[in-house]
Image 1 (tube, rainbow, N blue to C red):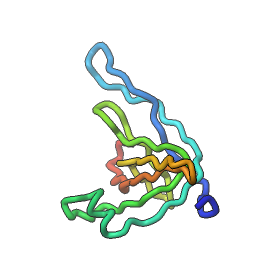
Image 2: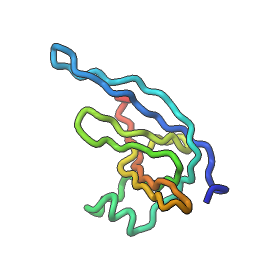
Image 3: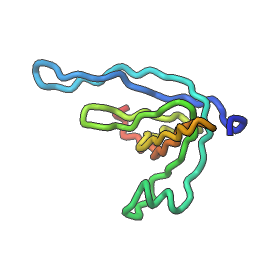
Length: 117
């Protein structure tokens, strides 16, 4: 599996904070490079990621040694994969840590840019 991985960029945001006035301030964005294999989803995976049958947003799966983070609670932001000129928001990341070929498999949806970064 290692031979198929290539360097890709991941945008990660540090934690934001609430101001005394009750306004949310986003954290700082930084970019890390990870080695990953990015692949299209099969029909079963599309149904798992988008169960309503709404396949209008493209999705990919990512195999990597680096854990990628989805948004887990309000006020946190998911990692974003930068791949082929498109931004992909991480929606799930599962560990496969058997000790043989340990890795993570993540799923990401295409970010429909609304101009809000």
